[in-house]
Image (cartoon, rainbow, N blue to C red):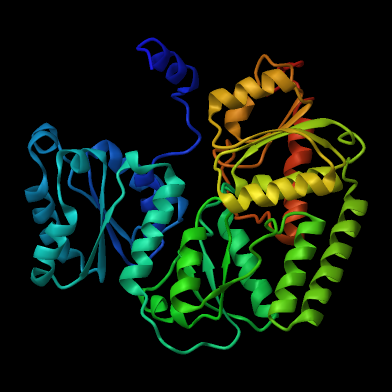
Length: 447
């Protein structure tokens, strides 16, 4: 290979505008979901901001969960920061927490800090559990960080109970979801399972107590609530503890068909067919009646070409939703991840719907902008990034549904299920009519 060809090929694909943050952030997103814990970032202060952002993503209470940082400076990055880590762990005793997660950023791992050895040596000197997680940003995207930390959490805290709790479920990776109010999706899933007399023994992870990890191996089944991360954890639970994964090969429950299939499979597996049928019948009737009364403007969207730029968790089920419910034509589908299960589901959906859009995985902002410029759809389902990326491309409508999003919500709104459909309709209709709102004042106020 010549010297000239390598940089040219590399430079053509390189982008400085990723949608996803690093593995360090994904690990922080995950462990902060353990109730009452302390997350110690072995990192410079800049990386500590990622932990603060993850704190907000999990909507944790600062009076219950602690976050610390070793705040490494030049000396520690050059010569190592293990002494600083030891001192910070010892100081954490004053917080009176049951567990401390030590996350290592890029700098300490590059210079050779061994956080596992440090935690092992100091463990007898403290009165709390210490779990080190090597999750430097260079190990991958935030989805990789979620998988890394889930693996450590399960291996460190789950033991084989050698018994099964009847009709029990373990929910996996609800936080690996670009719905900005994903907690509402999780609440909807729990409500559905309760109506089918199923018991959720643990959620990996959101407000998960340490005691809940004891019951994970006793779960009969698991459901991964993401197409972007969590599959490795579900595979491990199935192989090691015989926790069967269900609802694996279908999209998440967004839209009529996806929700019906998801609820029907749950009803079959949990021996609750009557409950599932009741949920489907009542839910579909509610959506139709509400749209008829409120006057959802479907006609204006019908047959418009569209693009979907999203995570796989929301993006894959959106394909059928926009095709069947909104009667639109997907011409571009760009997903932020490339998991095997998500690829298989998307390819199957496209075959069934007889669609041939432009598809890309592991996309970044540059690729999305380039794809939108080539396809020039009439509408885009995406985030605030697409709202800016579409400027100058003569794309009339940008529907902001996924994170990062410009809107700040005080109330969590689900996308899953039938109320989720109405929430999506409302967001779409608001963005549709926002295009016609005057950007200039046409009158002089009298006050």
